[in-house]
Length: 455
Ligand code: PMP
Image 1 (cartoon, rainbow, N blue to C red):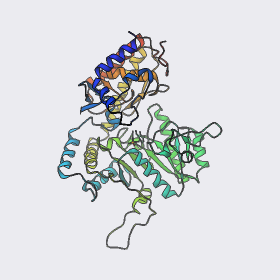
Image 2 (tube, rainbow, N blue to C red):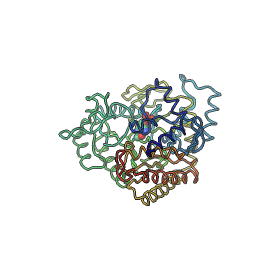
Image 3 (cartoon, helix red, strand yellow):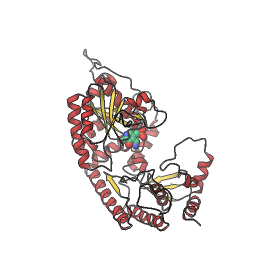
Image 4 (tube, rainbow, N blue to C red):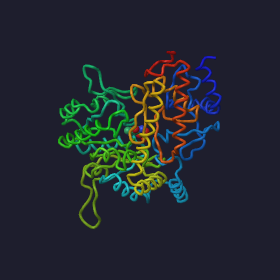
């Protein structure tokens, strides 16, 4: 039997109930994460359905166990169901979890976040997309300008205005829609610039009177640290001079790269920073934190009782039904306390473990004479370009690793404090075996997009 057909048959057999669930639920409209649809692998294009999570692992509906490096897409820094989050959630469930009156935990969490992030004020939301949307709106309100600048290859969530890419040759820096459904006039409002280039700084400077904000991701694993650091400092200087809001999107890096995220790591302070994932302790919570000058656009700024003070800053509209959901606040408060008490050693330790893991993975790949390599950004690791999640090797590798009981996001992953040395060994062993099988079956394992032809 053909190798691929044989592999597909085994995978289907192992995950039969996940496949049935997917087949029975065609009413559910969803993109096929994490590796998308591919006609040659159509028969295994369905998501693995999970029934139970604990520490660094989960179990699927077919009772297969997986070491999980997807880790809630990076939201579970302390693994699945850490005891302190579970206890906080149970306590809150007992008290009730409705929204409407002010949540008792909101101001406690706000104080903890001010302490952890070093920012002056904070506001809450549910998703990273929402936090970025609010951050940009605050920047526009305060600067009285409309346009934003962001960088090619970055991701800032699914707002229309950030689902953009750089334009065509004759007009390369004006954004065009990244995907159908994004209006051209919205995309055009964005300047989409090359990351870490001097030219980008010049263009930002040229457009200083139109730009409300420069939006930059806290980190991208495939970029050298030095490049990030220098660029962050240059951006900070320029945005300061031009009074453009520097928005640092810390969704991936917040509380992960360092307690104070990329800003602490690279030694800069943004005007506004957006957080999500880790801080929610596995629950949906996002945070917009920043200088009072910007956050005051939500409520007009602080005022006191018993005197003539009142909201004085120009305000914009910010509202969201579940932005202070008591369960999210309870999980986040427990997580923030844990982060504060653990100190910077937590991130330093995990970052170092990830670096060692990536070295081991790359050593194994070098021995197998493939050009695939991994890189790390803090405790996040990903394949180094030109390999990306859509390349055929990555898709095949994802399914092979899953069939060995190791689950990654594509083949990217997050280390958590719950992963054990055995879990890391499982990944290294599964990678070696998967790549060997693919190579022995004649698949090209040294090009980024070999298609499915044998080499
Ligand atoms: N910004 C960045 C840097 C992200 O990585 C993500 C999601 N991974 C988002 C924003 C959007 O977050 P969400 O999916 O919670 O909307």
